[in-house]
Length: 252
Ligand SMILES: Cc1cc2nc3c(=O)[nH]c(=O)nc-3n(C[C@H](O)[C@H](O)[C@H](O)COP(=O)(O)O)c2cc1C
Image (spheres, rainbow, N blue to C red):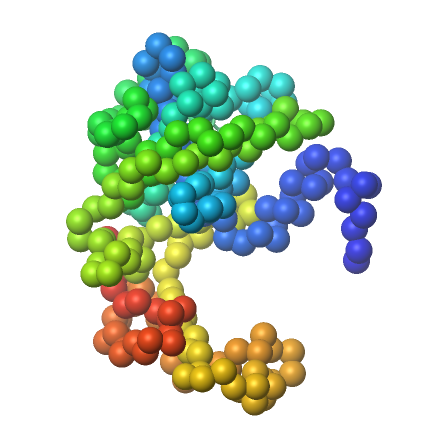
């Protein structure tokens, strides 16, 4: 099957994209209107686009009527600020409920029973209880014609990390985080890590000996590490092994 995107309407295109890009990370975006009304929205068209300066991207479509701009977008456009919070599995239900299209004069923190936490440099509040939050100022807003969609790049000014998740040498304890993602229109738990090793020196035979049809990366003898099962002892990490697992801890 080869699909010419010129033959697709927005809905068919959307279905193919969300069924193929798996899983998608979820930005739990908190904003404040120009008059100070708090808003929360999950956004799964979310990724990192720059590392230095750190820049995150979210894409906002219109409301379900297909034309009205979302309060999240209006708030970001009007104030130039927003916060991207990372949610844990324990917050999944709240994340889902925060997609409800409340009227713009409703403070969604209050309606959803979520606590605000102050930000340091932006007016938008953080979501208390989120293990990681990125305070962002708008870097650019990219309209996506012919649809009324907008891509927003946020320049990250502050990163709040729960102390116990902050490992030595500035790493995040990803296993302890217990995050989930979007899988098409459903959700998926990020609950295992499988490490891959690189050879100590560049080795063509190591790449060539990969079994036909494989990615060229040798399967390891270790199985994937279930984070919600019995934890294995962390293995020793080599300097070349930058892509490997960090640990195996049970998410909270
Ligand atoms: C898991 C999840 C992911 C979502 N991802 C997006 C997205 O990437 N872009 C978008 O515009 N809306 C997305 N939505 C819908 C918005 O969250 C929803 O329209 C928004 O909260 C509406 O509220 P607002 O008008 O107050 O911003 C998503 C909803 C859910 C449940």
